[in-house]
Image 1 (cartoon, rainbow, N blue to C red):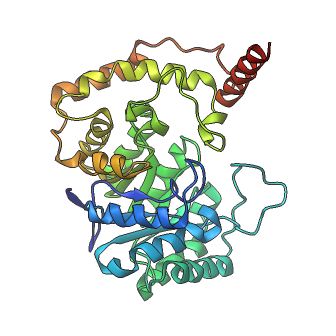
Image 2: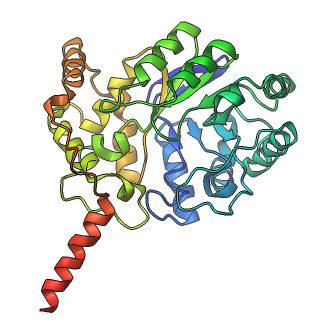
Length: 347
């Protein structure tokens, strides 16, 4: 493992651990013991940066992280997020975004609750979760955050962009107008915009970047095929089938990167070639994958020729023609296929 500076006094591993994978049910079901064990295995593998949110499992993810890492608290950097109304459940379905709640009393209460669930006296990086412009221009909110930073409850302040890829203007505005130490964004080999502009903004302002979804929701792990079946509850079942078909075709064009490294490791090395990136947050499902991805920083870095080849492929859409007529959701297509199979079996 290798390490970089995230903020003054905060050094983090180049590969981090985002615990939404093992706490939200979006990537499979994990028992509390399984989730705790994977956190601890990540630390044993050299990972020192752990990212969560008070919105993941309604605070349950913070509790898991706190229990898993309590014994090594002073050896890790903990980031969490705030800004959503955790009590707003009426009318909300599935993975639909919650409404925000950022009045000062709520933010104070959220911070105290996160400290309690994490079992710590300070949060190393406190991130406003998926902010809109109204949040970024709220002077009172940022004055409160700076006050709590001076008091020592928070060591660094950042914003985490999302939930969908985008948010170029919000990210640039936040970095240019607020004293941010970190910006969390979606960026990967297959989805480079608006990440390229955001990373340029990070270099301009001295903001450090945290990259999540570095494997494009699993495509760049190199294991998906056109016939991949996602289990019930997996959020990728809600994507258009064209996402899977086009993505698998694009990945074939990137196999040349598997020289002394796996494709999953190459995807992380591509990100780490940018000096603005402090750390990455791959989705980690099990110990085997953890060991593979934690070893990525020690694999051969991408050469200038490989980086140039990737840039050229991206500009040509990897020579893949968009499938505009393949908008059926993956889950619907898989369910229909299963129904047809059952009907044939019953004949």
